[in-house]
Length: 97
Image (cartoon, rainbow, N blue to C red; front, side, top):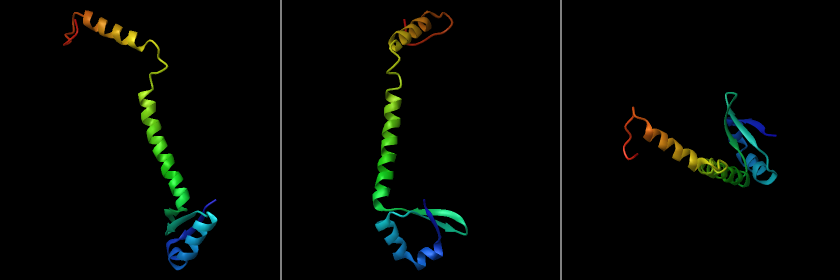
């Protein structure tokens, strides 16, 4: 669970707050006028957060690339679409017979 601390208090007790974060793994939410503005976490936790963000970005791209892997007849469906579009008399499509 995070501790909440005001900006002025962080300024007054900065070294103690840093020690709690780095040595004890404490989390602090820093507020200004009662509104959360920032958070203080250990370097180790920040690195974990950044790695997770990178995984999510890669996962998103891979998901987009592999989205049709389970659709085994996709090539047949695409070919059928092009065939039907090519057969349509009311629509001219460049490069399609």
